[in-house]
Amino acid sequence: MIKNIVFDIGNVLAGFVWQDFYRSFGFSEEIFDKLANATVKNPMWNEMDRGAMSDDELLAGFIRNDPSIEKEIRQVFANVKGMVVRYDYAAGWIRELKERGCGVYVISNFAHKAHMDCADALDFLSQVDGAILSYQVRLIKPDPEIYRLLCRKYDLDARECVFIDDTERNVTAARAERMAGIVFHNLEQARGELEEMLTGAGGR
Image 1 (cartoon, helix red, strand yellow):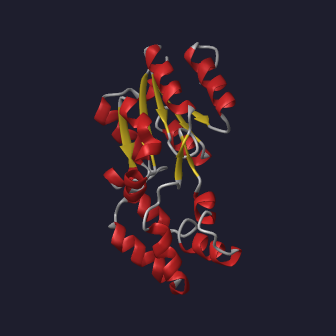
Image 2 (spheres, rainbow, N blue to C red):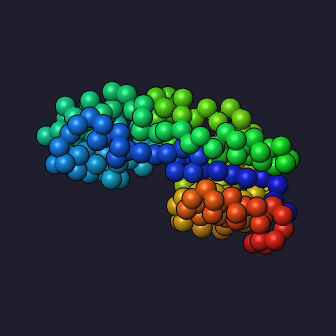
């Protein structure tokens, strides 16, 4: 029986819209591509989420990836407010689930700077029963330990949890830890699959 819903944040409860954010600066397509390759598309981005490096160390690392765009990298990372945007349905969905008696939790790959600068888009976090943000625990999905940590910290039975994430490998990892899983494609699809699980129609 599913008693606890565990959400990812990015592109599930809030939008990770780095492309729109970068384009908002009015950069050329060449600069946009360079920025993407030096930051979001670079393996160092995982270290940003892992929290193993300070914000200053990360900025220096991104600049080393492509010194030709140092000015633009500094401009973008002065404040990343707008890289994560609120999904208006998130707070209502969480409230609805809690009113039905479900526990609601979060596991998300999330960077310290994004947490600080985009706090207004994450107001739903005050409503959940617990959260694991990757930078706080030095772990990123799909490392199995991050799912185990949630269960230990909040005394949850993994078999009573369903994990909802937009990335299939992260859901696969949760299933390997005995959680049920839903790959989020859109709100209607995810709500439908979750409802089947909660009413016992969907099984595992």
